[in-house]
Length: 214
Image (cartoon, rainbow, N blue to C red; front, side, top):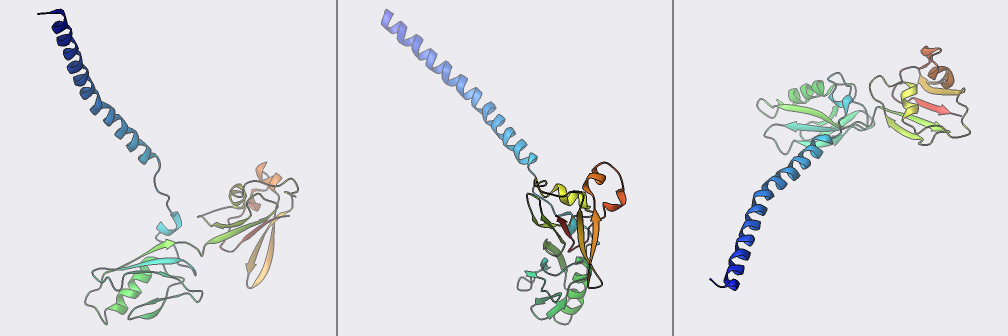
């Protein structure tokens, strides 16, 4: 065998060896990428709405509901709750929704549909919660409307509003609430609250409350 032929044989062997090595590493690299992708997807679950999942949640005006009637696509739809507290459905026209739980409303719709459908199967879920809102206004970084979470307090509402401005009078904060059609002002001293004094003032908020930071 000539020297040139020997060199060609050696080069061919090196090419084959390198290809085999690359093939053996690719699956591992791919698996590693897939594992990383799976970890990322598991670390970012979709957001949930705790209030809507609560079986005792009462439907309010401006909430958005999903009405699902099994095997009746023309009756399955997403509907808003009107300011008068009702929703509009085919065959049934107006149905009172405000004040009922999703399960209670499903029962009402089921009974009404029995006039037109044999053994209707109805489920109701809350797609958007728009009725349970509180408001933070005044000398805060992020004034606006916020979803009222279960058992939310004044401190928790303020914590979500981005902090105070330099001009905030944090000893003179108050909650503006409507009771029996009349506005009621409930004082709140932020300095006392964070120091653990007078904890009773850190009240649980109600729908429609306005936290004012003068």
